[in-house]
Length: 191
Image (tube, rainbow, N blue to C red):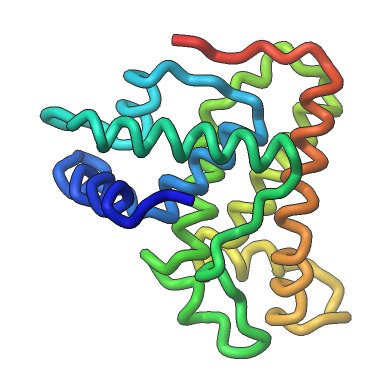
């Protein structure tokens, strides 16, 4: 568990960067890296996640690297839990899928990590798995994306029920993808 002072220091850093990701985007990105088994050098990680920045203090970098290591460990050991704030109520899900809310922010981070994953050397079926899991997380990045994932579905479930079922599968699909990638030869992107 990360001490509050370290988390506060990292949040202070993000506010001075070009992209200014919130804590859920950061966590989602690190979890996405772990699931795709993508290892990034610290400078590439900082540039990809934060964009341009002036400088970073040692404690801020240590916090980010600690969070990265923790995400890799928890995903690898299949002990990762989505952030508690990433809840999806049974009704009235529109406010939860608004911009800057925890669930869409987390999923935007995961999608961003999947977008930089190098899948060129993967078998076609595994590449499709990566894209399917990416699309699943993308369904929660906004209300529009959620509605798009519901379009064309058989009207067996309501929109809210459909999204509840998808949300329940997020963690399972993430771990399944991690397992599929670990079985084959996986090239990590080391910059």
